Image 1 (cartoon, helix red, strand yellow):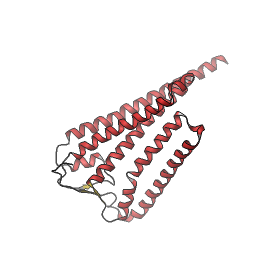
Image 2: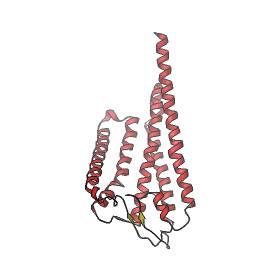
Image 3: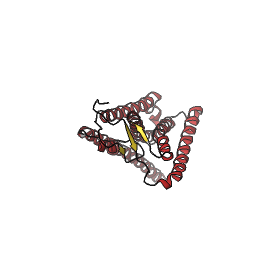
Image 4: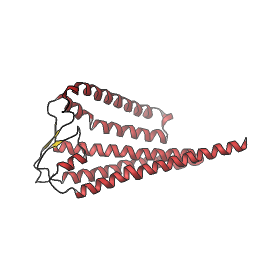
Length: 234
């Protein structure tokens, strides 16, 4: 953290404008969190203890469930606390930690969806070579690549946020820490942060999306060709 940083904590504004809904929102968030946590834990347990589910598709689903637990757990508990206290605050380091884990988990989920799309492409378009294409070693390499790439991206963006100077307002107009509202509070140049954030958004939001669309496009094309071939044979 920069020696010039005056702000040591941030105030999470959250839903403070509507205190009459706090109990209702608390119950909703708590219920959703419990359902998400229970569902993901059950998925992980089912895949881990059932040898029949030790396939590439379920391996990636296990990774997705793990990342979803990290993503929701980095935000919801603090949001629940904020709904029960009059003034919700988070330390500077706590805010940066939340930002890191949230960015890491959310970006990993997006990349995992692309990897799962490729897995389905291999299974449908190349069924005879599927076991070779999606070997255990290759699947492990893909999953590790997703975790490492997204951890690096999250670390870079969090590190760039840490180096900023925060010497004025410390109220975040949100119920968790994320990059855009934090950049608005900085009293130093955020040009590099904006560039890196734009590049990350372009990769995860555009390139990653196109990769998924292309994979499913090949899948649909393969299915249509198989149906056409079956129709001609009849």
